[in-house]
Length: 497
Image (cartoon, rainbow, N blue to C red; front, top):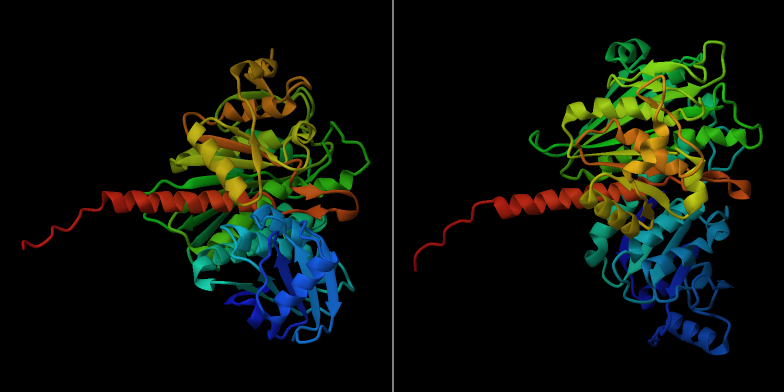
């Protein structure tokens, strides 16, 4: 979809030709003398329009308005959260085949973040999956004009939001694909295709290369599948070589049966979403290609299937990870941590400023936090604070969870250096403690997105989270590096008077 930003007063909005004009009306709206202001004021006075977020009043061919359809939408206090809620209420409208060109105009001076929230909400509401449908109608909405009081003041925010939408939709597309249309090989090809963008390089490692690297834990998960594994290595070089990169690691289990520890049949189809961490890394790189920030980023994706073949790893088997630590696989359905631990060990070779792994790792995190916030575990307080702030800015929130050493007690094994599971209690935490064994002294964070990566039921589908959180974090770090360089730059001496 194409978004454009314009300076549009309410008077100019009334003359803007489009199929749909959406006006966001806040509490305390102050009308002027233009036709739209008069219409809003009359609707509020009559009680036909409320400013509570998401309350709608729809009109067809309104007099004096160039748009064919007009929708007045309450947006409460006009903050980013309320604007997103207001736009989400228009989901069915944005998907109407009759709506090809739309405009969304703020009937107020918006605070920081509202333009980005509106752009992301429009994209989310109008998204249509079509990849494996024979007669699917593609998204009819092709262009959206975002009208604000001063386009220049929010141009940077708008550009970030438009790039973020591109990345989120790329992530959603790959997470939504059925497993036979998103094999490890195809995921690798999707990553390779990103290298057509300036600044991005891709390297693919196959089974032989992974075996040579000594990734015994990753190999163990993949050995029950006929689909060959892929270890994807992406590089975005936006800064000088002297700047250490941030490494993003995405769990890429393209389908998870649980292996020999077989999952129940009910809703097992949703295990195609088990590569949502990998999809989010792909989405971040797609957005980086649009924005080109001054930062270096490495993306690692261990991609494979977890299947119950006769060659599959068995409960009680002991494998040797790339780090040299041995692991007793007590439950083959705790496979995500096995592929991630080898990727974490590999990531250390880049001497990163930080490592962040992203995974649909545990049902325990869903129990703890539901579908609102992703679980955040971090070894470094500054990294944790930046990720929390980035999530809040992106309306993609997370919640920091504990990493007390005592939680690792349950991972002790009589037959290996550690087991891959502990008891049921604190399952999301013990999974994070397992991963922490492979981190060393590098600042590290783990995002458990099992509750936020997709929705079930009638709204079944990938959300594209946490692409927003990760991109905002990277942009924040790019800004911090720029400020540091500026502060360190020698000042020119002033000429003598």
